Length: 58
Image (cartoon, rainbow, N blue to C red; front, side, top):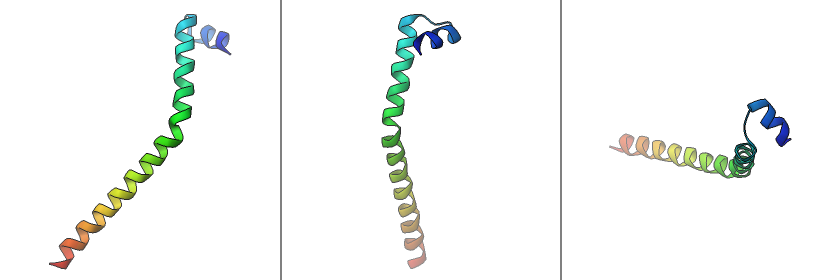
């Protein structure tokens, strides 16, 4: 696999290994990032709802 990446990208061995390690890392943290994004969206919805509630109450 590494040889194919090096041949296609014209990269050296170390650079290809670094790219492969970065790809693995991104795959490993993707579910956690997705979960954080979902939590942020939920909090933003709650804030908007609270803002609507406070303006409607007056």
